[in-house]
Image (cartoon, rainbow, N blue to C red):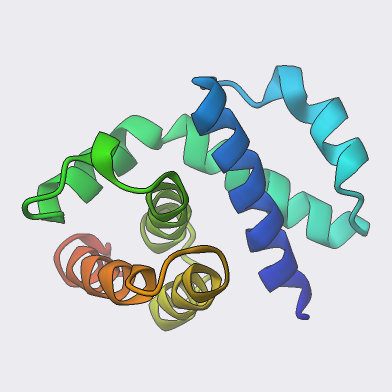
Length: 138
């Protein structure tokens, strides 16, 4: 498995944990979480950046998701899907070094692994709309 895919999967697990516990700040949980999910330095750094970036921009990310998720309330989405979307939207809108196709494809593949049978289609459609409407041009 590629290092960045592993980082995304571990970041998803951390975001999922924080979401279920209603925590907005990953810092109090860092030591325990990373002790249970040891990674090499580069993979850890990328995963940690994803978690921190996603959490620090979560209000804007959630607004974007809600704006384009027709007939879907963010709180009623599956927790896994919601956090895959948050992670991918963070990559799409704040990580200029990640090509949009990569961010979307990674989210789809992770959804196939962790989500339901319908998750990948739902996530693909929503991320495609967000990318076309909101992605800044660099």
